[in-house]
Structures are given as structure tokens and as C-alpha cells.
Length: 547
Image 1 (spheres, one colour):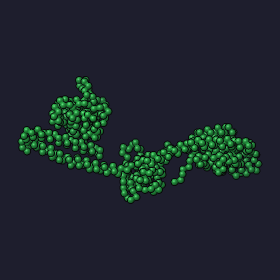
Image 2 (cartoon, rainbow, N blue to C red; image 1 turned 90 degrees about the vertical axis):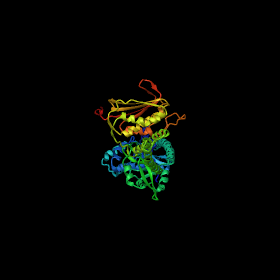
Image 3 (cartoon, one colour; image 1 turned 30 degrees about the horizontal axis):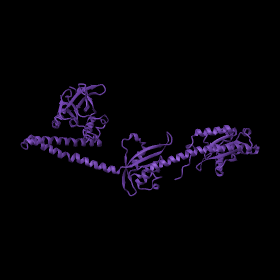
Image 4 (cartoon, rainbow, N blue to C red; image 1 turned 135 degrees about the vertical axis):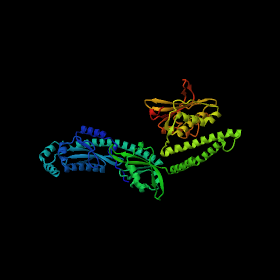
């Protein structure tokens, strides 16, 4: 690839250049300007004579000759390696050009002059005016008379000062250039150390730059990628074209999209893409930077996880239900009478199958929510009955630890539509959690009340208080996360597989409600209790449903 031309304005701010040229002009009283390699002005044209402003540059041919003259001066100065004094190619005035050199690159030219060391003949002046199409010959000649005349020795003194100024500009530019070069080298090293593929493109989608990881990921050398359309790298080019054209905002995308990518041998792998536009100005797009991460292995793991979840939720669910049915038949006496030992053990086994069934159901619902969202099956019911049934499910666990569960049905007995199966599972999860972390012989308090507020309308508030160790403040926001468990050293903190509370949060929020924990909490008597208070609220659709 061709080396990019260094631009003086990339190295020194234009305001600084303007100040330098302006001060040089004030000190010398000659005309001066900083021009690019084509002779086009970079700074303003300082102290230009009336001849040059109003006549020499007043016609297309005149302007073209002025720019060509400044370009010529810069090229000759570059050749000889010092300021070049010459007659301008337009009016024959004396000019001098000093090239600005940065690391061997000619980046700009400082031009000064528009003076005479001796008067021009009328014939020369008329010939110059005619060649550029001047009609006001008289005005041209009068403006020529105003051009300052200085000795050649004086001109050389000014040129010497101009050379010093040019060196100052070059020195400033070199410092910035070396700093940028070191930065770019470090940046290049960093980019090439990244394992993700980094690709920059122009506005048309043609690749302009890649890192080493791109070559490895795509199995192609850089020559087969750089300069080619990035869309050709993908199995479905139009899909990536739409992605690039959408002007995607990384902050608005929850999960970056995944694309099928082709290798030269026809092998397909999967790459997750993120993209950011590069702007030349606030309104002008320069291109895009695309970061691609190979997620082929992750896709395989995801497929394995889906297969495992399918096995756990379906293949395990049916056997558990079968065991429950058999145990229920045994308890009901349909398979014969149980002895005293069997009467003690079968309820415990049945209770364990209920817990296992709940775990499988929690797992399935969380998985379904992640894939397609949780669908509620709402039927009429009431919270008091649901809590009473939930308490019956955990009675055996509570009795084992001699824990009393205090619940008095109250204002939450009105009928309302909800997915009561999942609400009951939520209550069972919270009750089992309270039993697990309550000391033997303690009490658990359960309450459900109907409340009204201006902000939240009508809702049922369920409270389950225990007298356990409680939950540290810094962990209260984490306990509802999937698979979260604490790393307790003494074994007394709340632990588990981390699905019960996750499901509870999912079920409550699916009903438009909210669940939270308070620890420690203040009970109804105003006493601060070191324990856990789990609360959730479910909105009641309208006051008319209350009776």
C-alpha cells in the first residue's frame, strides 16, 4: 500500500501556523504565506501587495500561475535543500520559498516576497498583464509602482530569517510526528496482540486495514483481504451488508449479532460482530471498524447446554412424576397397609420428590424465559389459599427442625387471575429457603395483605420472615441471580444451587410485581430482628376485583 502523505495540519494546529507567519510578516514587512505542495494557501495571505491581490490573482489564469509559482519555488527549494530565490511566474516579482521538511518528507512551503530588487521594464509588465488577461492595464501599472523595492542584500537577510522560521516550524512538526509515530507503533503492537479480528473499512465496505488475528481467523493472507469487500468474507454477504448499513449503535444492542464466516476451504465458523463508525468530521463518515470474535466453540457449548437442559427437564420430569404417583398410592393405602416405619419414611420420600420436581420445574421455566419468554397460564385463585397449600408442602421439612410456621389468613383471600401454580412454587421456594436457614426451634412468620398506594395502585404484599443469620448487605442484590451461592467459610451462610430465588424473581416479575429481601428487618413490634425478610408484591388489576 502507498504511504500516506504527511499533512502539516495533522502535526501543527492552524492557529499556531497563522501566528508564526503573521509575526514574521510584521517583522519583515514583506508578503508571506504557508502553502501546500500544490501551492494552495494553508494560512491566510499576509501583507499581499495590491498588484497580487487585485490583479495577478484576479483572473483564472493569474491564480493558476501564482499557485504554480509557489509550487515551483517549493520544489526547487527541496532540491537544493535551502531557500530558493526566484522571479515569480506571474508578474516577475522576487519571491523566496523555503520547504518545511519532516523526517525527509516535504509537507509544506513557506513563501515570502512580492518585492523588486530593481524596477521592471514597461514591456515586461505589459507582457505579464496580457498573458493573464488583465483589462485594466493602467491600474495594473499603477499597482506595480507600489511594489516595494529592496536591495538584494536586504532580500537575502529577510530570506535568512525566513529560513530560521521554517526550521522552527519543521522542529515543531518533527516533535509531533515522532510522538505520533511512537503512539502508532504502540497502538499497532496492541492491536496485533488482540485475539479478536479487527478490520477497518472505507464507506463502501472495502477493507483498508486488518490485524494479525484477522489473518489467522479467516485463514487468508492480508493481500487476499485488504482492498477487497468485507462482505465477501461471509457466507451470507447481504446479511452483513445490512448490518453495516444499519448504522448500528453498540450501546443499543444487548447481544452483538453472530454471522456465518467462510474460510477458503469452504469451512464455516461463527463470528460475533460489533461495529463502530469512524467519522472524518461530525457529519462525514470515514468508514467502519469491525471487531469479530470467533464464537464457534461457544455455539457448540450452547448446543450441548440446550441438549442437557432438554434431558433434565423432560427426561427427568416424567420419572419423578411416576415416583410421586407410586408414593401417593402407597400413602393412600391403595397398595396395601404400611407399617409404622413405612408410614414415617414414605412421606419423607414423597416430600423429596416434590422438592426435586420443583427444582426441575424451576430449571425449565428459567430456560424457557431465556429462550422465548415465560408464558403465564392465569386462572382465578387467591393468595391466602395458595400460601396455606405452600405451607402444607413444607410442613415435613419444618417439623424435622421443630420450626413453627405462623400464618393467619387475612385480607388476601379475594379471587384474582394469576398463574397460581408458579406463584405457589415461588412461595414454596421462599418457605424452604427460610426453613433451611432458620435455627432449630425458631419461628417463621408468613403474612399476606392487600394494600393500596397512589404510585402502585392495588397489590397483594406477601411477607415471609425468618430468624436466621440473615444476609449481608453486599450480597442482597446478588442472591436472585442464577446459580449464585455464597462462599461461606463457616457453612452458616445461605447456600443452594441458586435457582429457587431466580425462579421466584422471574415468576413475580412476569406478573408485573417485585420481589426483594430485607436483612436485618423490623418486625410488627418495632424490634430489629437479625434474620431474613423476603417480600414480594403482585398487582391487583382493579379495585372492582376486591371483595
